[in-house]
Amino acid sequence: MTARFDQGPWAAAGVQTVQPGVHRVPLPLPNDGLHAVNVYLLEDLDDDGGIVMIDGGWAIPEARKTLEEALAAIDRDPGDISHILVTHIHRDHYTHAVELRRLLGSRVYLGAGERPGLEMLDRLRSDQPVGSLRTLRAAGAGELADHIEAMDHGGYDPSVWEAPDRWLGAETLSFGDRELRVVPTPGHTKGHVVFLDEQRGLLFSGDHVLPHITPSIGFELAEPGGRPLADYLDSLRLMTRYADARLLPAHGPVADSAHTRVGELLAHHDDRLAASLAALGEDTLDAHAVARGLAWTRRAVPFGNLSAFNQMLAINETAAHLDVLVLRGQLTVAFTDGVNQYTRVR
Image (cartoon, rainbow, N blue to C red; front, side):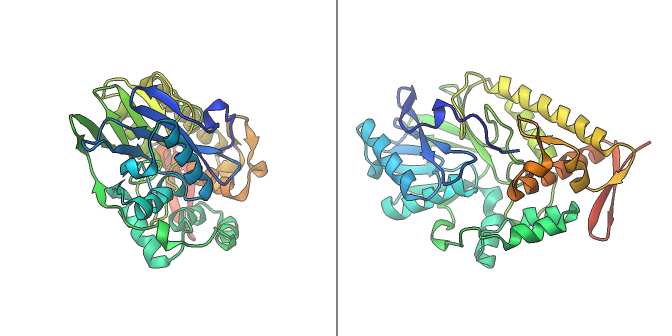
């Protein structure tokens, strides 16, 4: 699950030139979990000399100021940003992109799988994670869902939740003589995509592959459904079908091998599947009960010490792990009185 971790120097303001024409810029976030989100500035893609930006950041004044300072450091200015390619709809990636479009006229791109969530936002006029709350209730944590629903989520701002200029599928984007392959990678969200620069061996991985932490699974604005962890594991394996590339993540430092980190993430989820099965034991339990028997984050924090929001992520991820065990024939599930109850196959 996404959680506090050693931020290290990667989150400090400034510009890291990954290679000529490719720059990593960490933009600040207004919370104390993850301090920054990386955006990437690609100078040599646009025929007109503009900048292609990957991910947008969170729409806060500090992010715009930091971006302007970073652009000045490479002798550019915000007006040079012509295209913004966003990996997924979460506010720390999308909302600043929409704000920059309004200010600069940049074109914004987003994975087509995010469309239902964005349309639900427009209908509900609220940025509450409706899908995640329904999953939480089905996991046996109705009181926690009520508590989170009643929390102040910062208010709905329609100006930063507008539709993109273009919805992306599995395709290749051409910018001059360079190409970026768009690879749908559902799991973290239904519409998450990564951008693969095969010519230079660079993977702009968003939250799909992170070097220090495992991303939350299925944190959705739209209706719940599908099999987020199974989809995520499939999306991880998909990365190994392409040549290995340098990992340029949304949170954390650049790493030399995406394949190495993918292997570590797959092994981690194997361990969590085994731990979830052990926590269930011989009982029939809901995901809330199983989550309380597991340790969380790299520091093995007890469930009760997590914040309400992180408890929601923990319970929903536990449900996702249990659902994979059902798919593998190791558990059965019965939907009773609005709650999924899991039992080991004997």
